[in-house]
Length: 208
Image 1 (cartoon, one colour):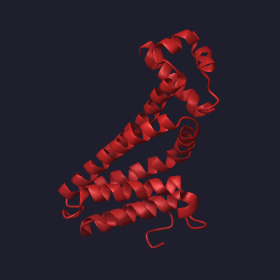
Image 2: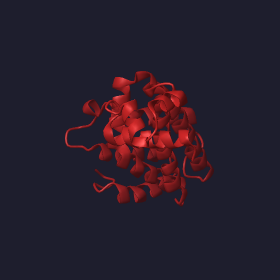
Image 3: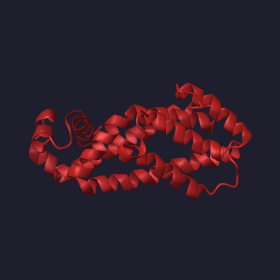
């Protein structure tokens, strides 16, 4: 690991644990035992370092979801495993995105755009695999399905104050919306698997 990569990783941990706004370049230099001049020579300014640190954070989460889903027996089980990871990280991710949106909107917009492209690519791979395995119907419009799922899931976190019924947790909403979405495009075998996996991830059960 070279010096620049080490600084990005350490700065990422500081931003995540201490808050994006409160961590200054002086704090990073002191924590890492480097001069502030070195930081500015390597990164230019805090915004550039922040982008690289948050890019590393969100990419590490995406790769973690890939690893978790790799052991699934089919794409539907992989989907529920990914959902579990998303919900486990939800609070930290929402806090970071909220701070980025408020204090560094240009960084937030860039990360959102790049993250959306990666998420859409991953969803496309899942849908195409599901069709190939006979779990999803072949007549679905993949691009439309990706947009509906991506923006619905995003709305739950971004505007949960408007969307979630009283007494329903964010996790319950995610499980219901995502599982019902996939059930709607599934073959009979896919629907059977969804009902089975949902029992493991939704304590309320499939009939709630």
